[in-house]
Every structure is written in C-alpha cells, then in structure tokens.
Amino acid sequence: MVGLENDKVILRALRGEALEVPPLWLMRQAGRYLPEYRALRAKAKSFLELCLTPDIAEEITLQPVRRFGFDAAILFADILLVPYALGQKLWFQEGEGPRLEPLTVDAISGLTRAEVPERLAPVFETIRRLRKSLAGETTLIGFAGAPWTVATYMIAGAGSDDSAAARLFALKEPKAFARLIDVLVDATVDYLVAQVSAGAEVLQLFESWAATIPAESVAVYSIDPLTRIVEGVRAKASVPIIVFPRGAGSNYLRYDAIGADALSLDTHVLLDSVVGALKTTCLQGNLDPFRLIAGGKALEDSVRHIRRAMSGRPFIFNLGHGIRQETPVEHVQQLVRLVREKAA
Image 1 (cartoon, rainbow, N blue to C red):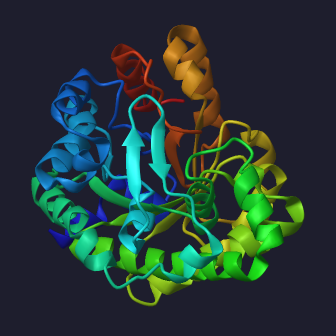
Image 2 (cartoon, rainbow, N blue to C red; image 1 turned 180 degrees about the vertical axis):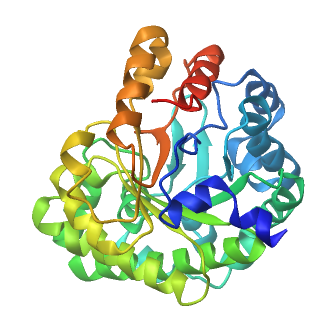
C-alpha cells in the first residue's frame, strides 16, 4: 500500500518529478455541470446539508472521478465551513450563493475554536470514508479558504467583486481585523491538520480574492497568514500544500516565497513569462474555463500550449479557476483525452 501511494502521479509531481503526461484534476470538478450532482442536489434541503452529510458528500466527491478518471478527488465541502464552525450563522440562498450574518467588531471577540472539531466532524468522517472508497491510484485533496478570502465573506455577509466591506473594515478597525485574521489562521490550521488525520493526502489553500487586496497590504492580509498556516500545518502533519492566489498578478512572485509545494496559476498568468521566474517546486493550472465550455479547437490549442509551456518541469494540469455550471460533460471528456496524450 505504501509503495502504491508513493506512486500516485500527483504526489510525484508535488515531490518535484517532471512527468511526460501531467496529472489532472479540476477545481469544482464535483458540481452543477454534472447531471448526477444535480439529481442529488434536488433531493437535499440545503447546500449545507450536502456538505455535512457524509453519505452525500462522499458520493458527490466520487462522481467526477468515477465518470472521468481524474487523478485526484477533492473533498466536497465549502470554504465557509470554518466561519460556521467558529459560530457565525451560515446559510445558502438558492440562486444567490452563501450568506453569513455580517461580523461586527464585538462579534469577532465571540468567535471560538472550541467547537470546530465537533461542528466539522461530518467533514472528517467524509474524508475517512473516501480514503476507503477511492481507488488506490487516486489522491484525496482536502482544502480550506485563506484567511483574507474567508474574512471578506464574514465581514460583508456575502461575496463581493471588490471586497469593499472587508477593505474598509480593515482600515477603520485594524486591531479587530488583525484579531479576526489570527482566529482564522489558528482555526484553519486546526481544520487542515484534522483533515490530514482523517486521510487527506494533499491540501489546497484558496485565496480566491487575492485580486482585491491593495498592493501595500498583500503581505499583511494574505502572504503572512498563509505562511503561518503552511508552517502550522507542517509542524503537525507531513503533507504537500498547494496555494492558489487567484488574481494575484505580479504578486505571484511574492506568493512564491510562502514555501508551499505548489502554486496554482489563474487564467491571467502567461505561462511563458513565469516558468523561469517562480521557484516553487510544482506549478498547477491554468486552462481558461471558458475554453472548456467552448471545446473543439479552442480547447485543443490551449491544452497543447499549456503542456508545451510546462514540459520538463513538475506540473499538475488544472483550470485557472473552477469549472462552470454550463460546461458540457463531453468537453471534459475531450480535455481528459488531450491531457493524457503522450505528446503535447
């Protein structure tokens, strides 16, 4: 078993091996583009029920692996389970997405890590079940949101393209915002270490709103907290860590210093310009999800360009953001064929 796990292609890439055929998984690979997911979702009372019912979360995680044979399964959950576990009210508005009761300065002092293990116990049970049900060659990826990204939702109560509420809060209430980041760092370390204990083999940290961080605040709001999480997890668990700072632009060079095992690149990164500049062992990305929707030659040209650009270095093929709901299943099948061709 140990030998088989050591041969998993994603783990080989994360250890620094350049593979002729790159390993493949997709962000949001378990989701609304799949008819089998939509059938399960229609029966559930809420999205939160999907995440916190191990039978359902396990099945949803397995659906894309079963259909496409991806090299990894990523746990079906949500980055906002951490604020939920800290005691913030969370619900999902149908057709609109997640909603939280917006945080006040006083509410931050009421957040507690004490109930995190109990409130997220169903997630850890899902992971334990997945390690038993996944094929031996498939890597199980756990994940969490980065503190800045999670804080933007906690303060505004919803997602925002400019993170205005969080940016203003951080400027007006710097001490309270720093306390919030500290709480999120510690809770995220706890959460990720528990995922590893349950069976997660790789972890990914999603800094989904990196693009909204003012340049002078990137270190304080994002890079320093992520570095603390990586160091905190590694002090307790030996597992590769991927960091995805979506929209980081030129700041990717700053995220390179975090010390993660891999950086995941978004669709705006020109691979030819970063391959030599980034020192992180492994890179991941960065197919445009709209090319996956388009399929055909648009998809074929992009896949081959990415593979050529990343040839000869440790690389995991992925999207530059999550798969979109309108993506045709047959185009995902086309992608799998293209990525797994021997010659790029």
